[in-house]
Image 1 (cartoon, helix red, strand yellow):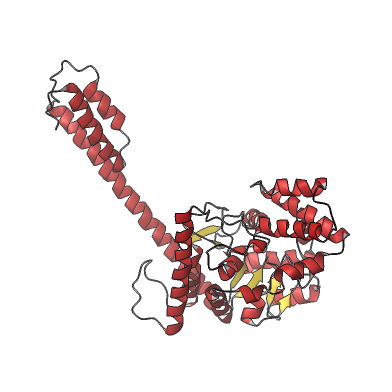
Image 2 (image 1 turned 45 degrees about the horizontal axis):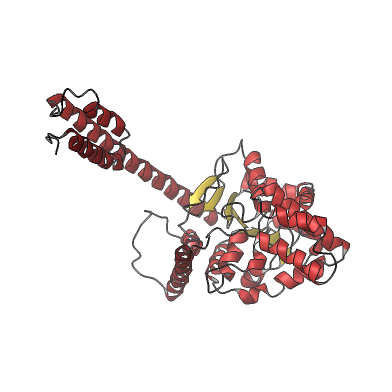
Length: 413
């Protein structure tokens, strides 16, 4: 190919060969191409021996780059494995607190079509509340603030989304409809659970002495794990939960059963930050526990959770990097110095990952073969596969896979 006597043909040959080099990670294609096509002495110019050596050197460069990438991946796998085994050790010592976010509720209640229930996504929740007020004639759809809230929901900025929720909260309070509306959204949500595998996994971890906290308004965890609800209002209960004297699910952002505690907007979030009992609990867990954030997704799925992670990151600057954030392979969310741990390409991989944490045996590899499965484990994996198939159908239909979900998380790592 390099002996082509036609200069244009030779240039095309080198260009094509250079593209194959690029696939190996070599970034020097333009240099090679110019070296053989510029200042050529004549139409029939043939590369010199030195030029052949240069090409071999560039090819070697691509090979080295490829090996470096493989070494980088191996190191990433090693660190992840180390983190997983450290989490298992913390679980055995009763030192893990799990903060549950919106992704858990979405995973458990996703519809057979593969789409989430609209009313439990962040945008869907706020829109549902505004529609509720308009339908029941508490506000006019042409109201300036209502229109403003709807416009803010088109933004991807956390502050805009929280402001839209604040407008809704203000309208609901003025009409004394907050308790009724919350009940209409979350009252029968447990009946919509179609994929309980993720709830089973959290229950298994709780039985291993993991503490459960959530920023979600729903009661899925309480019902599935058969645990009492713990709210912020009772300082005594919060203190008992912190000391390990009271078991339950702690709702950092409130529950629909306790409307006055529900965090719906930036002002409500400020109240949480000013709660001495809650801040004492979070500081204690940051110092003495390993915090595992589960179900946070891209951060946009729960603006309140996004703010919580940011705050937790700031508070942990001088602490060891032991608190972890579970993310999908494609999630871009990063909160240094929290340790990001990947569990798979979709939410379908989350339940098997959490069951893996609950197992007593230390992990020895990232891709070990499963020799045998119990009937319960088989059921979990089959449900996860069905969920992955829904993700695939969404991709084929062009439906966005990123869901914007409602206020479901708020504790700290």
